[in-house]
Image (cartoon, rainbow, N blue to C red):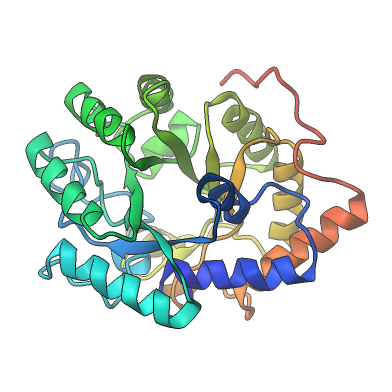
Length: 330
């Protein structure tokens, strides 16, 4: 998701790196290719949902780091029907990449947070397009009650369904500090409830949050390996404009990763990660006009992927080389 914040741009980055050489980790590109027998693209969809951390159900103000504008494609308009959003995205990626298979990606806000009848209606509208083979739903651990789980299980019998749970941190003191609105036990319960329902399980993680350190981030790799994950998105902390975190950073600056520091940590993290977990991202990528810091002056995805590949080759590492089955108990 570069200038247009379109997942297809990430696929282009993966293709660029794939031409260079094979990655020393199990990447999401091949994960989807294995599942569908062909390159599969995500089409971003704004389902018109909100978040319990914004509307007052849990709290207000949202997570301190979050500005939804930083990861929603600017061409999306929630006033436009889901049907039209999907059709536009599919046609655009067909013309740009020759793509044939697609997943409808509900990313903004919490996409399992609504009455189950509304969820079913909006999911099915996205699935009406003949080239859409499934759903990817970004959500929170506290937005997966039994009616929603039953709906996802039912849809998964006919379509690919992936649920991406925003974990962000496995440490309760951090979750409290960033106003997450739930603890890590809620995350473990969510994955336990999802497991065995035919749903593919993904997660989103931020490394570098204030108050954490290198040892804690490596312990997080062990904790991720203990969850029943199919794939993981790993982001470095970015300070985005219009967030509470930006105010905190200006008032009392906290350390952020340099490019070289991130490459080092990412290599150490990946080497400790269970080898069958596909890696869907290896850095964050907020649009330049919304990014306060860190500013690396690089094209993040191609250069970060290449940097990780180079460093892991140098160390003779691949994903899972330092993995231990017994997780750190948090």
